[in-house]
Length: 70
Image 1: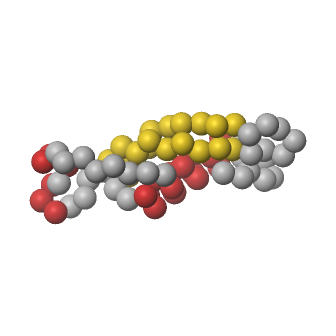
Image 2 (image 1 turned 180 degrees about the vertical axis):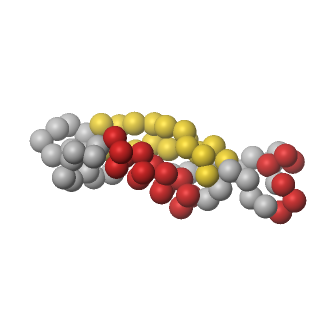
């Protein structure tokens, strides 16, 4: 994941970090299938927030898989 900060005044909120949009590119590897490369936009204040949201989405989308490598 990568983050490029934007210098917009409305995002600063007086020292409180606002949620930002992150462009997330990832590869899913399922057993016995070709890797799937995906790109999505997620919101979060920090990379850890976005990573957690990505894992939540993947757990919901691939709930029946016993193993999912990202």
